[in-house]
Length: 240
Image (tube, rainbow, N blue to C red; front, side, top):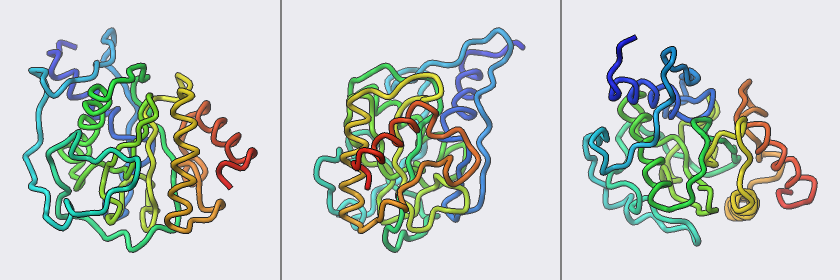
């Protein structure tokens, strides 16, 4: 196949950077994610910085005043640090949080720890979700990077797009990385336990309503190594 680097990049991102193995639209209709399949002899694409010539920004969407005024969660980096785009109009209200679902990204392994690299990666995911999938915004509400930072994704007052037919009242947490191919960092595991516990207390979510994607739908997400750590967090009472 004679593909340009840009064509390979766009194809690879479209296939791989959409999140976990099964996601759904903002209206909870199912949308299957195809795994990363590269043309024969072609390596998977690398992360594209917002300053890279191959970076394509989606059409800007002004952030509504009511959205920008959303109360910040303590310890969470606001989305304005990684994107200037707001949430589109095709969204459903969350109407309260009753459950939490944990995911991995499932794309290429993550080794970077800088905030800038994490922001670029998250913006790439948002672009695929909005430009290629036609969704209103990135599908997840919070993202935990390799350094253990918690970064705001889709505003919590809106339903996400992260579990097929199960987005109502469901808070989505994404841990950056592919945990079928790598292990989460100690910082990620520690912060995942702390932040999940914080969200459970904030929203009154019981332990039985905190699940991983594979515990709801048939998928590898959140990857075998992260699933093992989540099981340990439960056994030790961190998520309980």
